[in-house]
Every structure is written in C-alpha cells, then in structure tokens.
Image 1 (tube, one colour):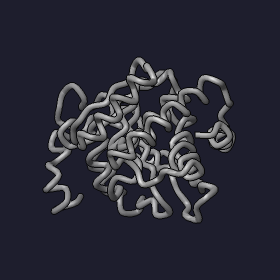
Image 2: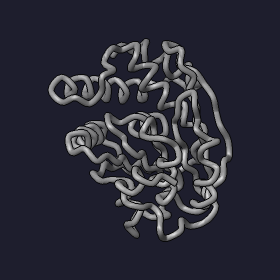
Image 3: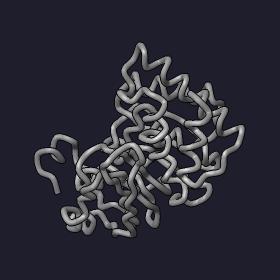
Length: 233
C-alpha cells in the first residue's frame, strides 16, 4: 500500500504521521491483501477505499477511547476497527472477537506479524462471551462496526462492558437511537453522545453512537441469539 494513502487517512483522522505507524499499517494491509487472495476477508481491496472505508473509519475512534483502556472489537472480521486502532493507539489492550475461524486465523497471523503485545484474537460469539464470567462486565470499551440493528447490538455488547465503561456502535445515517431507548433502560445504559461524520469517497453519512453503562447487566441478558432474533427487545 502506498504511504501517501496512509498519510492521507491519518491526516483526515487528525493523527500525526510517524514512520512506525506507516510501517505497521503498510505491513498489515499488504498481509491482508495477500491473504484475501485466497481467503475472502473483505470486498474492499483497492488502496483508496482501504484508506477511507477501513483505515480512516477505524481511526476516527481513537479520540473517544480512554488511555490504557481494555477494548473488545465485536465482529472484528479483517481487523477493522480493532487491529487498525491498535496501530495508532498502542496503549490499548485489544481483544479481537469473531465467530468465523478463517477470520480469527488471519487476525492471529496479523497480530503475530505486527508483534503486538496486549492484543489477542479469539473465536466466539458475543452472546456466549457475555455469559462467561471471564468476560462479562469486564471491558472498559466495546466497539462494533456494522454488525446488526442497534437494539440487538446493545444486548450483545453491553454485557461485556464494565459499569462506567463505554460501548461505541459504528452506524450509518440511521443511528437507530429512537428504537433503542427502552433497550437502554433494560440493559442499564444511557446515551452519552452521537458523533456524525462522512467519509470522503462516500455519500453516506455515518455515526458513532456512544453509550455509557451505568450498572451491571441484569442476569437474564444476553439471551440466546435465536431468541434475540425472534423476540428483539
């Protein structure tokens, strides 16, 4: 990947350009493109789109996450936003979660290539981790990008966040806040902010929905995925 594309994505994200960030980003993206030739990880493969729709879209998160935070990226896929975020925020303790083995295998290979510490990739489902004492009410921040409708996403994600922590949903033009007010009450969360932005090569507005968790998640949540789909909150 050309350094110019990376530099432009960093500049548009109000991030400083450093040789180490350039090196790590270039290494990550070249590895992604090589693996993607054999294993379908992303449909976005040209440098311009990778720079905006993947890197810049991931890096916009950096200013909303506290220093030294433990972060879980739910449905990390090809490493966006979590792995890309780790490149510009090495202080973060990152857990990359995906249910698809080939994607987790890629994430682990990328973490090994980049020699990150305080970073791991695990195969699993959010509704299962949310009931595991090792992960429930645990993370300072959970993030998820374009996974599912916000009410269901809240039920999957908030159980993983510690009381006082944050969940950041990366949504499109429709932030789905109005449909989520009741769910926030049930799951002990409150809306903290909605940040609206637009990527330069798209005409679709995007938003970050920032939720603060107030108390521990009631024990009946999250429900099984089949129940969530059949009877959304």
